[in-house]
Image 1 (cartoon, one colour):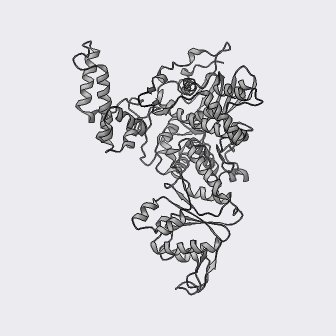
Image 2 (cartoon, one colour):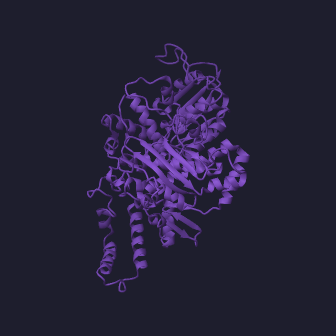
Image 3 (cartoon, rainbow, N blue to C red):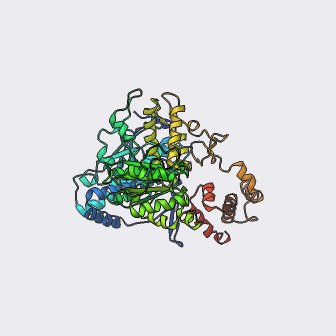
Length: 608
């Protein structure tokens, strides 16, 4: 059955081509995509919207593929290429969501397949597609023609017994996951490298596949992570079983981004040692969860894991809490008590917020780390302890050392194996995975029947800076689960209840996160237009003269007007951001690198 996508609401659309084959007219023109591709040969740069690109010979990719397979083995090579494709697809999904904001959902979605063709990877022909964003339903089937990846594999290895378009499968999974707002897994059911006439792929939510574990495993950099968190939805009202409870344990980590995978690689490298590990990163990025994971995969996994929040212990009690106390050591010490070091003997001691310790406490901790022994308060002899110390802080300890608030010798004692956990805004590929993970977690915990997220909610979460990182996202999803109506989806109003503002260029939302009065995104908001003042009025006057047939001969060429408008917008954005280029880039909807490139191109870089 053929369904007209324009006649259905945005939340649910189905599309099936006629039996005679794919109707090319159903695919929108690619002119809008090609207009986003810019070549700057004088600077050695190519841009696709705000993403820097490069042309690479397919034969070079074939050499890379062969080196990976022969050097790492076929399983690890496949995983690496799949994750590389996932990263590329997730970046293109952000472009797709803002490029055609007022188009039917089908036309907006096929930006990905069309970009795949524009980038010279493969020609994509949709066979069928069903999208219901609010219910988290997706099913897509596509044909790939002229797969460059399949051609290179056949050229090197000949006909294959299994599908080989690994990076393209990763691309399709990453693109669709970010677009739909939940983990979608694609599988190649036919492949040109196997002798088929073309490649054919099918995509569904991870939990909709009965045997998703093998395919999903290639998106996991390490086996101790859960990657896409492939869990089945449990009926509301049914008690969680042991398996689902384990899926949401404190040590459970999910993610697919390069930043997440880099941290996991570091964990794997240091896990089987006794080295002190220092986790660095903003508040809420999951430092304690990674610390628990480190303990879980280490040789001390069968021993105790003790976590201490140094910021929550009063200065007068920190010594007794860490090292223990003997009876009668001070008023109120009616019995001897072990400290955290003794309790963690043989296991792992996690010192969170270690940057808040006083200089006196730092000196006592330093001795325990150096000598491997502690002395209880009021005791006269020392005790040997076998403890692996893992610390975490959201402070810049080097700056704290320079300011005299943190001991330099303790810093170097802790900084044996530092691991920087990137903030969530730098690994947005993980947001749909975490959204789905937390949705399932809290619908089970609170026994609520919530189907998923609206398109506006997905776009808002992907656009929001998330200053609280994973902790803030988790709290927002839990809030949404509680506020959403039974059997419905979580909307923007359920998530942003504390005055948060986000930059959302699609789904009828204005740039500051408010719904525009016209129901669509305004090209230039009134505040911006008003603050630009005379320069903008001068330009609009020229355009009006052109529209009235007077021409531009008396007021400059079209190129000059375009340059003046761009210069005005760039300078205003920088002024509004008080010289902060990253903030100015966000105001303009481009990356910082793209802003710097434009400033240099316009000769404005030296004036900053």
